[in-house]
Amino acid sequence: MTSSRLKAVLTAIDNINSKDPNQTMIDGISQPNELLYGQYMTNCIEQYFPQSNELLQIAVRAQHIKRWDLKRTAFAEGKAGYYQWRIEQGRLHAQLTKSIMLENSYNENEAESTACILRKEKLKTNDDTQTLEDVACLVFLQYYFDAFAAKYTEKGNEAKIIRIVQKTWGKMSDRGHEIALSLTLPDHLAVIVGKALAS
Image (cartoon, rainbow, N blue to C red):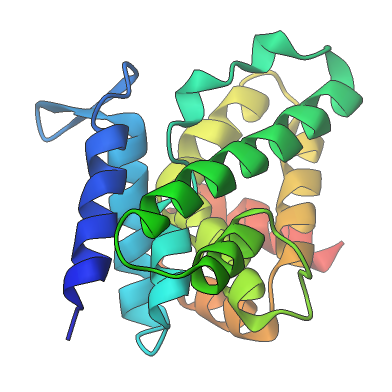
């Protein structure tokens, strides 16, 4: 049973993400990208990690909260700039989510614990942080991998996407791997995953 405070926080997150100016067409209907992403994340955790606690459920929904507000172009080009952008995104998501939780009857410890998950702290040792990473990777494979891979395969750079799959795989837990292998991917994507895992 979902608590009233959890419902309030998830609604607040959705209200923010509904303002994303970037849109995706789903069944002929235009939807805000990050609102859609948050729903994918929640659906994934409910399906594969149904016993997850409230703090993790919030972190999963808020993984990309207001992501559009911090532009990649505000940081240096290249790998170092990319990682700095990712770190700052995590801080933004954590800070905003923490403030929402404090406004909706969660205490400081609960809000800060959720912020730690969103900052991806103690990955591999904090079960909740690891589960968030697993869910993000699974959602990527299910909903975003096809378009992402196409950008590289069209340029004849399949090796690049294979390396990305390998890095994604390295972030996941054994349970995440098990779920990922159970996904029904289009044949051309399954081939890429197969090559990545065979290397």
